[in-house]
Image 1 (tube, rainbow, N blue to C red):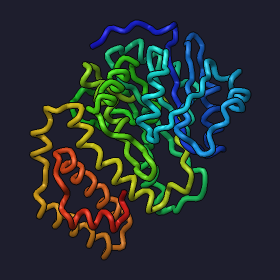
Image 2: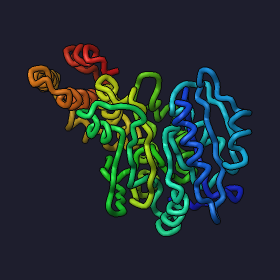
Image 3: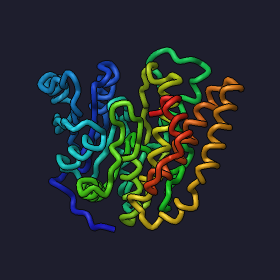
Image 4: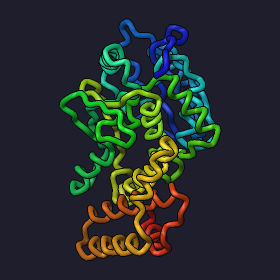
Length: 340
C-alpha cells in the first residue's frame, strides 16, 4: 500500500468526461456539481471534452459555471474512447483523490462530505462508490422494460457499507459512476495502459464496455487496497429514453460481460488457470447458445434475449482473453443479434 502525500492542497479532483452530451442532462450534472457541499474540502473540477462534435463551448461554460464550480477547467482529448478521456484527466489532476462523475450523473449535495468521512475513517479502501444509485429516465420508457433497465443502468440501494479485497469482481465493488480512488493508483493505471498492458478502451462509439472502470477498481485491489460501496454516497443516474430500448439494452448486456475476462487477466495474470477452467469447449458453447436462442425466440421473451446476450459476452470474453477465436456459429449469432 502506497504512502500518500497530498497534492497542492487539493483534496479531490472531480472529473466529468463527456462526448456529445445531451444538453439538458449535462446542465443538470453541472448544476449538481456546483451544489456540492465543499465545506472544509478543497476541490478542482475537470471537464474532458472527448472529441464532441461540435466541440463544447468552453468559454460559455466557464462564464456560466466558473464562479459556482471551484477550480473549473475544460480540457480536450481527441482520441475517441472513455479510457483516453480518463487518462487525460488523471494526467491533468492535482488532487490527492480523483472522483469520476459521468455527464449524466447528479451527485447528492452531501456526496463530498460523506466521502471525506469514509476516506478519513477507512484509508485502506482504495476505491469507493455510491451504495445508492437512483436511475431516472428523462423520457417515456416501455413499462415492461423499466425495472430491467434500471438494473442494467446500475441502480442499487445498499443498506449497509460493504467492502472486499478479492482478486475477482465482487457485488460490493463500485461501478464507474461516482468512483473515487487514490490518484497514485490511477497514475499506475495510466502507466500500464500506455505501456500496452491494459488494452480496454471503455465506451467507444457503439461499443458499450465498462472495461476501464473495472480495471481501475481491480488495480486498487492489486495495489493492496480494498474496494467498496457505502449507502451514504448517493447519486442520480439520468438516462434518456433513447437508451432504454431493446437494441441498446441487448448491446449493453453483451458489452459489459465480454470485457470481464480480459479485465481480470490483465490485472491479475495469475488468474489464467481460473479462466482456462471456465473455457467452454466450442461444441458446448455453440449448443448452449443455440438452445438459449431458441428459447428466446419460441418464448418471445425479450428478457431471455438479454440473458443470451450476456451469456455470449461472458463466454466469448474468456475466449478473447485466452487468445482464442470464438466458434463461428456463435460469432454468426452475435452478428445476427447486432451485439457489437
